[in-house]
Length: 338
Image (tube, rainbow, N blue to C red; front, side):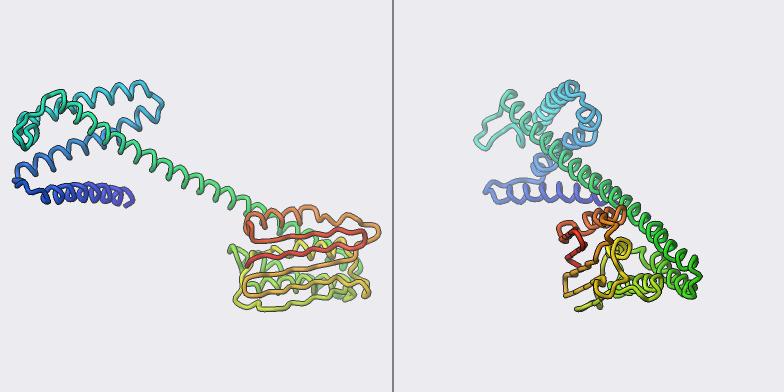
């Protein structure tokens, strides 16, 4: 189908060009008969168009693109000479239409040959320019496709890291409950199953509903509260318009994971502070936690490295991430264009 469209546009272009030349010739006061139109505006354009496609379809791919430049130039020179001789021969047959000017002057071989050589070179130049332009656009598209495939593969790899990373941390939490023989262990397992269901079945698209993503965050927070026997203190607020908004899935969870993992969550005087503020086009995410005295490293490892890379890929020039790692507190502020 694509090749048919290419043929159509090529034919359409030449038909329009020849029709335009015939129309221009009709504006002259000189009367032009049908035979002259057939010779001057059909036969000779056909010869030039043939030369165009010989270069476009055969010479450029077989010689020029394979860097056989010397052979290409020699063949071009031979073709220009042969076409020039052929045109002059046709001119002798239709002398009154080709070689005889209005004042009765007959164009000599040398003058006509030089003129027709320039015409041939012009059509060769057109075909070369078109070939290079098309090849450039095709190469650009191929490069874009390859880049998109590379980015898609990288995003798939980054996303594949999220589930094992999250599952590893969550199972550690549930293991602690089971080890303590906590009565909340079944509830924690149920909450984890809801979280994993969302991650496995509802996060396959590039973006998800923001409301579902926030519910997923709430489920994770509830799971952590179960882990701390409901003694995890977090000041969590969602403000603004969250309906009919979308966000890249599993983007914010790493910051909350790190707050629970590296922060102090069991002190009511220093709760984890989490604020998500949404307007028509932007989301502002803020989280702050007090750091453990014996754990000054809150860099987050693979989690934060993953989310930073995903932000660069999915929100290029559309986000601002500010991480403030102080002596006692760790603060993350993220603003992005939804």
